[in-house]
Length: 362
Image (tube, helix red, strand yellow):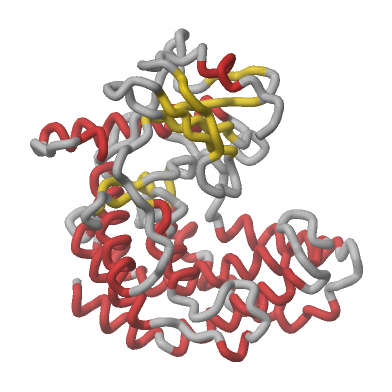
């Protein structure tokens, strides 16, 4: 804990109950998160977060995205006659000024109601992957008809054309003299550049839509009840317009790799077909109702896109002198790049099987 006066921050929010304790919660990497315990049995506990406005520079847009999405999901659940709705969608507390965030000299703060008797899962296996696929498909489905305007909380977050421009700028500058040693990796990326920017071209032509996506699909961004039943999707900072590939492909990039993304044994990287099949079954079971034929047809592209994109980002950072990602040793970003390129190769080798499986489900 630090010397921030949390009680002074909490006073600006319309909370129920008497504050008993404020202590750290979880181990999030982006936002500082604390649990606020109340004294009364009939008062909820709360989650207090300091928003990382170095990453999310437009806090007002960020919070409006979250407000619009959670309000829309709540309305959908009410119309469907769901019970226990307060455990199935996050509830954010307003300040005295009617906002869902408060700014003071220590930063931007927000509060949500703590969902009791809920747990997260950390293990990735076929069962949890199938649940993830279904949950994130449902999440997209519920937001597929939202009318309120939502913006990009991180502009161009998954824009492959931008990532390639950044790589090319890094190669041109060669700030720390590393280009020649990674020429083979640059060539790997460039050889696929036309194919991997297909989504942006189709979008400009009006053939591919953008939808409201979560954009950070991990197994631990879901809450489950005490019986293991899915409750709701959490960690909503990256909700924004994107291609559905952002939720589908990025989950598989991490979950279906047999090794962590910075494992140096790139020759041992394999693409887990059991995770791919389970996640895809779950995802299409809930998302196929609103997906267009071209979105389904391009799901194999999405599986390739995200290791490719991440390889380009890691390589860009290595060439720039490691200015973005935290590194633990000088070649860390280079190891990450080679790991993701190896995963891309494995996906490419399995592309026919991937396509056949998706076609069977479709």
